[in-house]
Length: 449
Image (tube, rainbow, N blue to C red):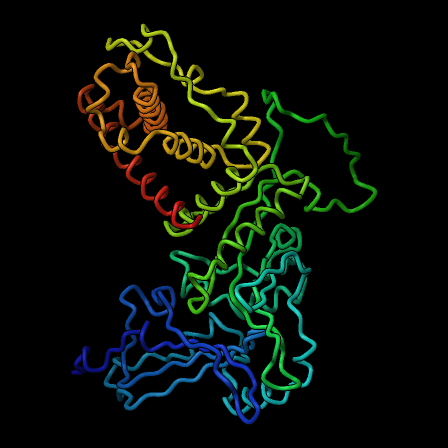
């Protein structure tokens, strides 16, 4: 019987991803790194059975991501009954195009001798150029109906499973109507001095996808636009891009060698700029963001609203009738008394922010306006509630009240199953956690200034 530990390999360590360029004499490796996850491919335990000294080399041409798979090992387990080594190439066929399994010599020859590589440019159109020190970068945007965009995305789909928690590769064989809803943004470094006369100037840095969710005008919306008249059947094709929609950011990835160098910030801001300039886009949302992406989004959105003066317009009312803050059951302070709701809705729609994201930014901003020593004191200074003589004490009291109301509304169904005192404790606990998160973000924002 096989010793599983002896013949079991850590898939995350066994897989090595390399970005390759041609060199003066032989191929040049720009960067090599390991995946963060392999469970979608090799199972929940992220182990590969049947090998000792296992190495799975996934090589990609740095410009067009032409792939090649190479598997090597020191020893392979000999089949005993129904126990046999994992068929690695068969497992990977679901995740990579068939030509990725060609011989390494053919891959080397293609890259080293491809005279057309110098003519390569990313698919779509150039939407942003920027520099970091002396290095140049570009962001390109294309529609998934473009065969060149599809080809590049097909080759990099495996990165979704390697680096995006619970990420799902896109279905590239879908109907054109569905494909037309997808936009893909590619980040490339543009090399000023390619390694050979025929080598491409471009090297992949990362990418993101976004999806258009068609929207319908609410009858009760005070911001509704004039009705549009459609004649059916249409005398000309109806473009998905021209129809009112929410832009949902789906996959978002900066490859490990390029992380922590502000490329995610440039990519996110470029996507938002694109959506803001699109008259058909009504709102910007994000699909199942990770904690790291949530932070990036908060930093970027806050900086944008701070820079254009939006946040300076948002004030917390602290001079309310003291009767409204009496410590009695049934006494409530409506949030409309604390904030100018019509103004907030106008600002939110102007920036096409989802309601929850805009609420976060408002709460972070209002908290930042309260002196730190008052925030650090917690409830010690709040015994006078809304009647405190210090306006900052009142601001902190009302800020806490505002956030509690939002927490309660969001979790009302669950909270109503608890008795009153337990309900109060749970909301208070959630408020403390929320303020702790905001304090962490504010420290991060200060470090980015």
